[in-house]
Amino acid sequence: MTGPQIVTGALYIDCGQPRRNGDWARPPRAKYECLTCGTTDGPVVGETAVKAFVATIRATHQQTHHQQGEAA
Image (cartoon, rainbow, N blue to C red; front, side, top):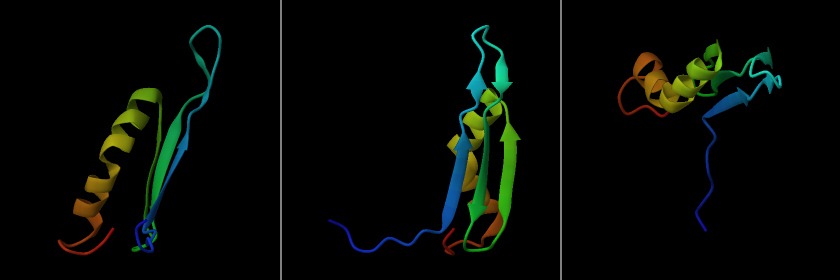
């Protein structure tokens, strides 16, 4: 078991609601909220955009909003 964990951000993902015909009744969307600096990245909408956002947001947010060595 590890020690206490500090939550520094929240990634919200709504997987959307697909229709039977392959279209979306409600498209997927995602956003990231940093609890360290108080900023929100996103929301992004659409299957491709959400996949890319989820894959890169932690590193992208760190580079954009925090100096090296500061937790994000």
